[in-house]
Image (tube, rainbow, N blue to C red; front, side, top):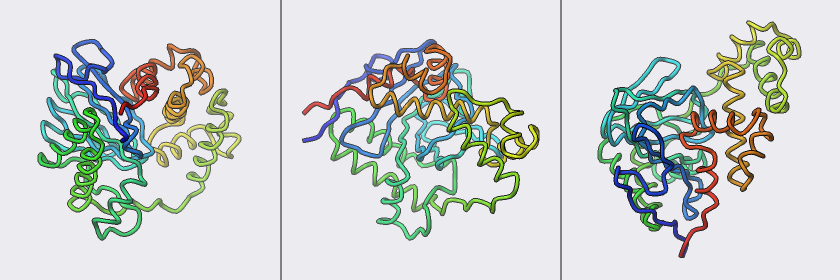
Length: 297
């Protein structure tokens, strides 16, 4: 039987294995071996703020306390207790507390493949499925998200997987829609795409903006505008996010944080720690330990 190790609950409401933080903050970002295609995060943040970043999969979260404010290209949205937040893949966003006391939430990060599978079985959505809304008042579904966490932490993967699929199906049926079709590529968008490819190839030694623009046949300011229009953030912000994504993959394979920092282009481990914690919500060491833990059962 495949199970996930249970960790119980700390006195402040967070899992015992959660990474301790200042100001009463705690966070646990982990993966259950019996739930492929899913990452989980339970956390309480007060002073922590997530900079603009994006995910290659979906984000589905329920706010369990306080208020979370999510910054999007069209403006900020807020969710309070019981509010459900839904973000599609590759949507640039930031997040921070919407009030001085901070916020707590239970978050699921299902892969695009898992969401597509649920949509295909339970909805009539055509094309690549996604969410047409960002925030919903859906406390019943929010409680299901919390129950997915509790079941996974208890090692009950049958219940966790069942509730996960029910929650996703409910949200897709009520708030689902096809993912936006990318606009036809313009000259500026083409330059931005070439610049992104170059940054991925030269992650450890990226060129200056002037040299990058010259290589893709653009000017620095034109490239800045085109890149932000295409990817929701300027090249240097996108590069930091891309480095953290690659660091996650290396840490999941067991690479030490110091070695990971060099491999993705950060100056040293403290730079990796700072950027990784800001974007992922937990330090790289804690992230690696959760994935190195072997399931029991």
